[in-house]
Length: 520
Image 1 (cartoon, helix red, strand yellow):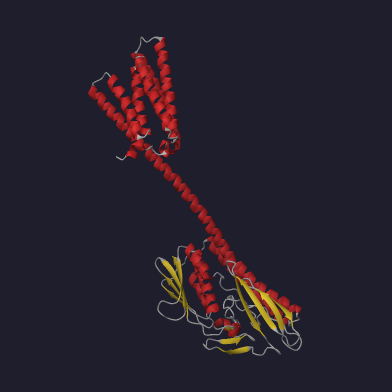
Image 2 (cartoon, helix red, strand yellow):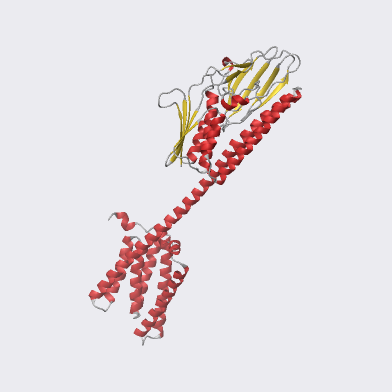
């Protein structure tokens, strides 16, 4: 054995009362105390029967020594719980001396019990080196004073040593169980706190994705309507803005219902939701495997990632048609959003599919919303406007009335998800009305493309910049996508124990691909 084995204390948990109380019930504890009192009374009665001729002085002396032994034993238990060797050794010495005093008064049974008990508790609660020495002294005194056959006495001493070591191991086992219980409770508390923080983050994410994004889009339309009213615009134009804002409110309400469904844990039909989203984007969804309901949070993540990926396609690859693929695997569900290189210059609005039929459009380099900005009203003989707009999330624009042949200038700022502003400036000059505007044929052949007045690729300073003042003709402007970007999508996946990768396709094809994998 190593040296530290002989000098090492049992663990504090093994010596504490707390570990014993957690193992023993109250009834068992009460029964143990009753047995101790009974044994003490039996010990006194037997000692008196063995010494019927003992005088009062010997009886009183024996009782005093027995009381001192009990006090020393209780003190020994207290100081060993604190692992105080300097106080534990005197207590053990007092126990051994009390046994010797009882033997001197002819209380042989009491002395034998005190010596044997001292050996057991020393082996149980002291370092093995000190406990072995105390046990040797106590059992040695018992062996020398016992009047039975020496072989029987030797066997008794061996049994007492074994009992002390077994009690030591039992105490260590109780201490280990107590430590495990404390660690388990700490782990449960940490898991509960982590779950609470994750739930808070989840609720905050849903509020951002649904309410903030939808409300910001409504704000754009309402602000545009206000500017048009101030500029005396046509009633029909103002009505279109109000109707578009109402549509945004309805979409936001539906998004809120879906988010609440996810928070309640309802099962979500993912395939139908992604098919509707693909139809709105003018593309198709390819489903592989047997479709099945999935947990609401997983379904919400799949839908949000698809929205964000499609938003990024419009922002960074205008004119590229995305392709969606949903794979139901035995252990996980995978979503792939792939697109080729963009085919339209920045500043052109690209529409196809159902959105082309509804007159919706997307401006490359925008914030991923259906259109952006506020229309500058026409007043007098021309369409001139000077405006400055700042957009955070959905955006807001301000315009000032022109004087017939005015100058349009726009500046936009966008505050991203984490508060880092992205700046971009675009300037457009239009003289004598709306020259240069109007639909042109898309190079990709995927639908009509409408070019903004005076906005060309050379005016786009930053692809991620928001356009401060844009002339748009479509009445609909909707928030699509969370605005979180790849980082937000990856966070969503990791919260579910899934993974998300984004980058160029591995097969060498041009374009970009986003792959999401979440547990089924």
